[in-house]
Amino acid sequence: MSSSDQIKDLIRTGKKVGYILESDLKKCISDLPIPDQEYIRHTIEGFKIQLITTKKDYDELKYLSGPDAIEFLQNLSNGTYNAFNKDEEESK
Image (tube, rainbow, N blue to C red; front, side, top):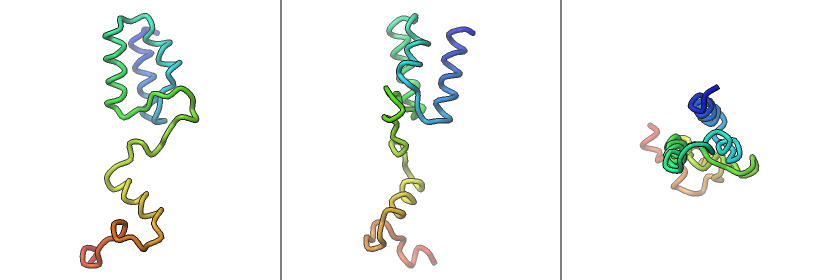
């Protein structure tokens, strides 16, 4: 499998699970020139895929935004904070 195919597969998997292990990425890009390695790293970050050292470092909430973030915060709220509750008129 070519280096390009390995990188594509790694990114596809990263999109599914949300992260790529640094060690896996290094295996795929270590033979490439430094500017190419940096480009690939920036591309991965642009896809909102986390580059982590161990699986324990993965933060599934890092890129949470919009309605998903609001729903998450509402689930944390005990209901007393107005910022986490819809106005009654908005919900009508």
